[in-house]
Image (tube, rainbow over all chains, first blue to last red; front, side, top):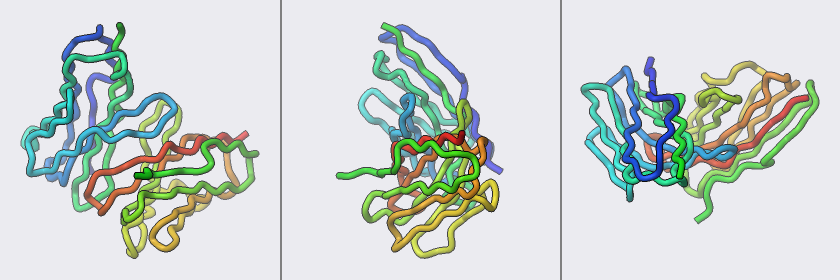
Length: 112
Length: 113
């Protein structure tokens, strides 16, 4: 059974810092991995989807990498802004199922 | 284009009543998922529909929960005889096919009093 862990659970940083959020998974036979953000009281917004054959994906100030052999993905946020404050979740599809397994998320606060 | 929509956005009901929650996926998306998110908890998978295949109901917590998807589009999640522990945000997501990018709706906040 796939298990997904996100570290740290919470993070508070000053504006302008470059950040790395981590997502670890136990079963390396994955189809893909997706990063989301969730604002308080809202649904999830898709950020990036990395297929198992890819090493990284980029969107604006966001860069997500994937290392299947070590069971890790990182989400890099460059030059953080207060608007980046949200909970970031990763979701992994694997094991013959298209039902993703979600991590518990990293709660990020970027203060001015 | 239009995203995933859910209705109602909020629902308050008395213990023991039945409720229906609705999800309209993105047009053309064949896969549809229901999740539950309780306060301070992670996302809990409930049910997965893919095209005309039989749904994967492995996440439904009890037989009080059921869901259907009519015409491969709109889905309804029904909770019978609601209990206080059913209080949560119910989220719906869709994807073009089973392994493609998931898009979530805004959720329905259910409160059972």
